[in-house]
Amino acid sequence: MTLTLPTYALTHCRLYTGEGQLADHAVRIAGDRIVDILPEAALPGDCPTVDLQGQVIAPGFIDLQLNGCGGVMFNDAITAATLDQMHRTNLRSGTTSFLPTLITAPDADMQAAIALVQQYRQQQPHSVLGLHLEGPYLNPQRKGIHNGADVRSLDPAMVQTLVEAGGETIKLLTLAPEQVTNTDIQQLVSAGIQVSAGHTNATLEEALVGFEAGISMATHLFNAMSPWQSRNPGMVGAVFQQESVYAGIIADGHHVHFTSIQLAKKLKGDKLFLVTDATPPAGTDPDGTDQMMSFQIGGHEVFYQGGKCVSAEGTLGGSALTMIGAIAHIVLDVGIELAEALRMASLYPARAIGVDHQLGRLAPGYMANLVLLDDRLSVLGVVDQGQLRSFAPDFLSQPSSPS
Image (cartoon, rainbow, N blue to C red; front, side):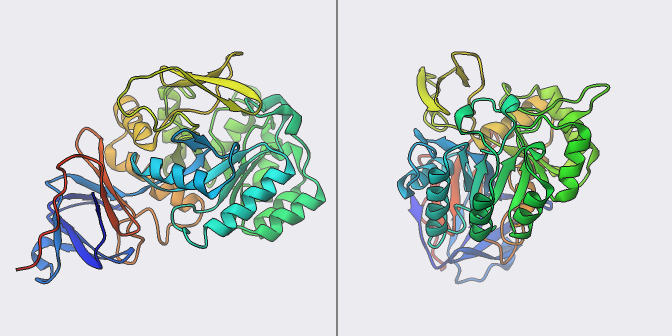
């Protein structure tokens, strides 16, 4: 069921606002915005209401690293139809906003992705928040599944192309700091582009120089980066040493040990956020049949089964993770309380890319992007830019009209 009303209120729910928890309160929505959060008893008498039967409401999830899902891969088809499919698939796992992620690719594909996202955001600025370019300016020793033939240096012409596109289109760029100059990093950051360290073999010293130049984030912490060792702290050690640096982490049980996530959380606090690094299998197996499938990444065939995406050589090729799946792992396997796990999927990524003034919280004036959950962490529905969508049979009835 999809519900579109000029104004309505969600009632009989438990609110996780991003700042705290509220009971016996309602969320009043007008158009695509939250206009009020107030005690149910204070609702205007003429406001239609939707009874949520005691379930949880939280801010819609935000995924800053999404290669594909729902059977599609952004690198394979840089089209609006791909973005539409990714968004539809995302909604079923509670993700209302995302960065489509183009991994290492030729210049022509990068330019096509920039043009597409720039155009797409004119109609959908709150579902696609911008583009994440993951590569191609990586360290070949840490390229992972990326196509080594396309890993290359950052040339002045592409610096100019990226700078001209700016941070409203290119929200995030992952690179290896030891492979570029400080001037390159400073130019990108000055254009409003968030620069993240990833696929890097940087020493501690090289990493710190990159952070000083303006790198503010680390891409999929622990994976494809120089590890923390006793006599060489590497990129991982640098991320832990720099309190202000954000880090995404893939909590699927395959990329990072849950104990490592637990320790990273203690060290990074509210700077650690969840990403899926999802690929085409994500969101395609709602019944848990777990059938084998394969797809292409970076010129490699990647096989999916048992919740894991891996090449014939044993290299991880993204994930089949959904954001609600990541939250479930964080709560059940890492031992983080639900309220904090929800912030790791909404408020903290919103802060990391500077959109927390309109996303990541339940508050008046914020975008009406919400997720509806039950106690088993199943997604029952979402509010997507004010439109209420139910995914569970018989969960929501039509709104009650004021008497």
